[in-house]
Amino acid sequence: MAHTNMRTQPRTGAQRIREFILSAAADGRLAPGAKLPTERQLARRFAVPRNAVRRTLAQLEAEGSITRHVGRGTFLASEPLGGAAEVPFERVLHTSPAELMEARLKLEPALAELIVTNATPADFERMETCLEKAERATTLDEFELWDAALHQALATATHNRFVIRVLDMVAAARQQAEWGKLKDRIVTPERRLKYREEHRDIVRALKDRDADRARAFIIAHLQHARRNLFGF
Image (cartoon, one colour):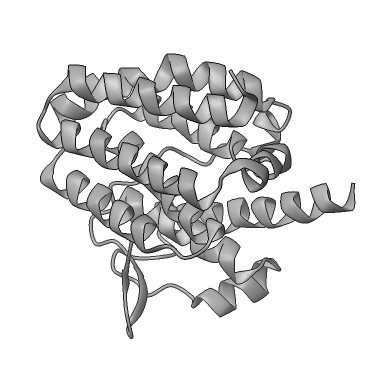
């Protein structure tokens, strides 16, 4: 039980950091281009580990809500694309990994058509950044951070607010302790390498504006992930 609480608390704190940044931007407390607190300051303020802060900032960066510059800091985007409003974690807390995977197999292939139709060059640049960061990841936590950022970038690239809101719920459910324990057990370095290749295939097809090929790659990737998680 203690292990579950340890995984759940940082995730909940990370949700509070995300809500703080997005709400401050929405109500004008943070002006476009404003410098954000440092990772250390956010970790201390919200009592979460630095890696939880990094994960949250990576997701916001992938959405286009913030920008990060080495040596300068983190800033609210001048023209943030933004994701959906924050989804309360508790609303999806009791979704099982099996239920989540079933829903993802129905929902995520449908993204292909929307992304092919609506994505901008900036959306594809964010996807490429996420791919490159994931490919350079040396730990599972770092890989998961950029994996989550890529999924958020894909959602944002639909430019459909309702779809983004639904996929925010998927992202929140994937942060559950039970989901985390499953991934800790089965995501080996070899499987990470395969996932990275599959992500590359998906993004390449989307950039080619080939919805059918992208949809097929998404389905294959999700089926592969399901086999690794559940053995079927």
